[in-house]
Structures are given as structure tokens and as C-alpha cells.
Amino acid sequence: MPAFDQLAPTYDTDFSYSQIGAMQRLMVSKYLVSHLPNSPLNILEINCGTGEDAVFLAKMQRKHQILATDYSTEMIRATTAKVKNAQLSHQITIQQLNIQEIHQLEGKFDLIFSNFGGLNCLSPEAIRQFGQNSQRLLKKDGRMIAVIMSTFCLWEHLYFIYQRDPKKAFRRWRKSPADFKVGQEQMPIWYYSPKGFQKLMGSAFQMKACLPIGLLVPPSYLESFFQKHPNWLQQLYDWEWKWGQQSFLGRFGDHYLIDSKLL
Image (spheres, rainbow, N blue to C red):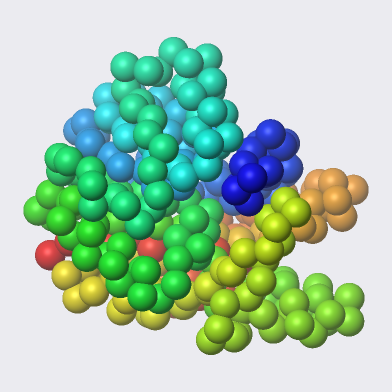
């Protein structure tokens, strides 16, 4: 069974609807609401997971058309059910597709969107290829908005040092991929700085913005601790949203949102 098939049944409970997951997703949603145009867009979503973002984009009341793709059979199943339940099948098309096969798609898109580390499953060479494929799929002045796991996360360093697990504390600093447990399987994950990711995507893309997602709000594996201290978590979220909207801080979050325009 593919790794992400194992996560699909509990992904929303474990992350999307958790306190920390909901806060990190809210930061992304706020950015999309504030920075996407009011006109309808043709959107390609990569690694759509359980369809949470596809449904959000369709509900923005801007009549966006979304092609939601994922390689996991069970994630596609979950997305299909969620879209049907939300009665949004007229706006959201769902397709099972490997990210490395997006060159097979037809048509042009205004926006390519990928949330919460889906692109970290790709090696540097695969990111370069993804950048080339994205150039062909985007319209002139089209945009690429992605949320990427960064190479530096202060929360992670401090937490795993406290846990006396230096391998995990510094796993993001490695040039080689880190082994990441997904369900019962191990899979390689690459971490990218904003500058490194932008370089791999190619000179045809110009960065418009970069902001941290999870600079003060902690990674989701600290959910059990912060369930006991919800006021602390809310305060961290408020501080991050107030003071964390600076591009130079992007590389220090658990993730960063990078918004690039095709030249």
C-alpha cells in the first residue's frame, strides 16, 4: 500500500482539524484570500490530500475552477467524498496523478498550488523538472504558490535536543534526504530553503512573497502538549500573524509559503 494511502483515513483528524494544523492552514488560507484576484482562476492543485484546500478554494465565491490531483488512491477517495458532500463537483475536477507526470495535462492554468510539504517528496532534480513542467502549464503571468518544509525549524531543533535525539534535531540540515515515517513505511524527504527552492524552480519564476508558516506556532507533533495549553497556542498564533509577515523570516518556520510569478 502506498505510504500516503495509510494516512488518508485519519489525516484530517490528525492534522487538518487539529489545533495546530488548523492554525497553520488558516495562515495559508488568509494569504490566499488576500492575494488572489477577485476574478475566476483556473487552478491546478498538486498533492491535494483529502481535498481540504480544493474545497476552500472553490468556496471563495470567486468561481475558481480547480483540478485537484494526488497520487494516493485513498487521498483521492477522501477528496471525492468531501467534494461530493460539499456539492462542489461543478467547480472541482479530481484526477489521480503522479506529480512527475503533470506534463501529461492539457490546458493552461492561472495558478499552481501545493500545500504543506507535498513538494518535499521530490528530489532536487525532480524539483527542476517540476519547474519546467510548471512553466509549460502556466499562462503568461501565472503564479506558483507552494508551502514547503524549510531547512531550519527552531521548534524542531529545541524539541528533539530536549528529547536527546540529535538525528531528528538536525535532520533538516542534511544535504541528503531524511527518512520520514509515513504510516508503516519510510520515505525520503528533502528540505529546501526559500532561496534553494526558487533556484531549482528556474529563472523563469520571480519570487513575489515568502512568509513563514509555523514560525511561532509549533509543528503538529506537539499537538498533545498544546491541547493542554490552548491559550498559549492562541497567543503564539496571534504573535506570528502580527509580526511574522516578513520575507526574511520565511526560512525559519516549520514551513514557508512561497509565491512566485512566471515571467
